[in-house]
Image (cartoon, rainbow, N blue to C red; front, side, top):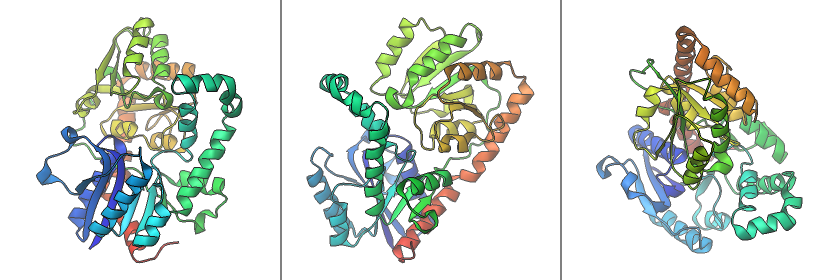
Length: 392
């Protein structure tokens, strides 16, 4: 029996947590595995029925006291007899000592683009009144061109890489980008590319309504919803029989609603968090992202699986891989050209039904490569290699 534990801050919360559950369900069905989830904050109302759970859920302290959290994780590793610890997004403080004392093998699963930390670093330097003052007085000169933030991101990634037995990224292009930046020989590194899975949808609805749909966190520093609202403002009078629907919640939800009101946007609906997002995908003709950074965006893969036409800025290799071939499986817009994005939406609206249907069918067919069984098997093979010490 191989025992696997995944560490999350919030559970369940979004795409990364959904993928953990997918892997757990596959391993349970395969046999020979037990899966645990260690989480700081647990949303009981979002959990599935206890009887159908494919993993054991454990609560751990929040990151407010990293040392206490690390000690509790070490205690659970010993108590549960964990063989492999999957650290989602980044490694935990003190992981080297934990490995030495417990013998656990570790994986870091990077669910964003390589060196995503640079965006978070820039965001935190401007968050809050004191930080905004410091930004104007000092930090803007140090961080404005992004060089220092990238340097810090590379250092953090190198720490995660060297303290892990396997470092997992979301596509082959990310593997190459990470190895190159870290100065590694990609073939002799312990970087592995495993994509995010996506479920096939039975009876895909191709009879769509004139709806442009956004699904995601209202976290404007990364998702750039303000850009989407500006784009809609530029096309709304030319797409008079279309509407924009936004599904999701987050820290910037009310601010984005206020922005839409101030811009006097027409036919815009803010739906908040929804448990049944599939109902929105089934109706939407187009699904959009205007993010500044994305790893392997589930909103786009979910859209493709539901027969929607997906549009996004080509901000990362992951986004491009999901949507390419361009104009056949979706639309990649030059980062961050809002005018080109608006023209793309207008072009889609003016397409005839046959051309739109062909793009929808191509997108559905592409998702066959990324069904949970295929992706989870890649994880299982990696776990087996780690357990048997057959890893670079």
